[in-house]
Length: 229
Ligand code: DC
Image (cartoon, rainbow, N blue to C red):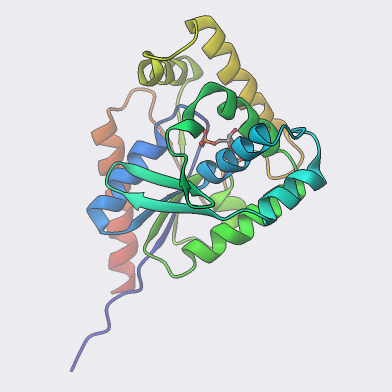
């Protein structure tokens, strides 16, 4: 008799910028043999297109049309997501400062979000995914098998971002102010603001090492898998 193997999970990791979601999600996915999908990269891809086409970040209809006319692809690799826009690798470009700022602005629009959420559902619906973002547990996969809300003190998040971007970064105060403004926008926008889902497990990583956070999430995953056996 063959014992059916448990369905692969959908794991949602949400939280603010600079909290270390991408690294954790990518390491977790690698350990589980799952695919890691960075939903923010899709907003960044659209933002880059808007920059290249000189479109207004406030024009919701134009942005939606641009999204509909684009092929945005996330390829999970060992080092994180490779992002393709109409076949072109834009992975490095979308991490730059102008795109980061623009992504924060294009992601406030409800119609843009609706389009993104539909694509993200298509990508993750089969399970075996760790998807990270701001609204994965609340909107994209409200029935996710495991929801994590990763948080950390703003000062720590600013420091982590600075460490990541030291080479090409702007002055520290400017970057910290920009991060705070993006945070404010994420948390106060009318459409899907950044909030923890009611059934999310909150992890405050302010005083935790990356390995500790990963270990804690692995325990939660193991519990979920065990409950399915
Ligand atoms: O996670 P990130 O920094 O790459 O995200 C880029 C922007 O996209 C960020 O300003 C917030 C927004 N975003 C969002 O609104 N919803 C998501 N699920 C992911 C990102």
